[in-house]
View 1 (cartoon, rainbow, N blue to C red):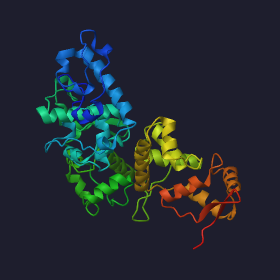
View 2: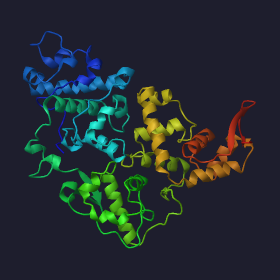
View 3: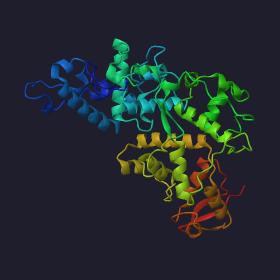
Length: 424
């Protein structure tokens, strides 16, 4: 992949796609020097900026432009959020676009999750939709739009030697990296290799696969012919819609586990992934579900999106917060918080993880009905199920979100929060 920093010499600084946002924003004169007395708008910074101002000034202009876009995203008008991305010609691969590493990773994650089949399909996405991708912010948006507009205007750029990802090979010749047995492996080096032989007795059901990998293989017809995978190369597997480097790593890991005799037979048609045993507190279990299901697993436990979703849904024990209240804590708009939390809600439902501590908490509440909510909350803490007096409003939200049955309801009676059994 021709990794390339924004701004790219000879290309637009300001994408046409954000012209409406930048048309009335003037470039600070201090960035241009005394020689330029006429006002210049950010929206006018096209390819000619490189010859007009020079590379050093263009770097400063690009940095300031991204900052202005970042500010504009907080109150992005609906007409810009609903604006479709440019539609690229057919047969262009993601790896052929000149993008920063972060932008590429965000779009690649969409492919892995099955939300993007071909790069051309970006033309069906709106600016608001790509901004809802975790980690995709103002710089990624500017980076993607300028790259796409360059392709539409001038065709695919020819990568320079410094942009080649593998010595002696153009960057577009490989897919990136995947991790196997603790090593980061360049896919370009193995894309022509066939997958390993399937162990005797293995089926799609008794491989301990991530649900995403399982569903992708099942969708492509390998449920009853798993051994046919032996005839496929790494490159052919990665060409399957929705099957990315994460699925490849997961499949190879599952085969290793099966061969080592550490398989876990599934008792039902639905795969249910276990929460790590080290989680002994409900708050930790719920935070794990958010971070694991939404691919924040490499982030720290204090990741902003994890904390934001936990506060909104009440997974932190505080009972839940409105979108507006959660946004004010992090300086985000209500709509931006809604996009993040909606993605969390959708992906947590998709992941289908076991929740022993949530189930234990629901059972403990059910055994105490009817009672004052504060009393039950204190007992959950005393039993070591929760870290704090976990408000039952959050427990009910977690149950609904994860499809668990919670046979109780909350009501305020005489100014006191009460919890009682639900009657038909």
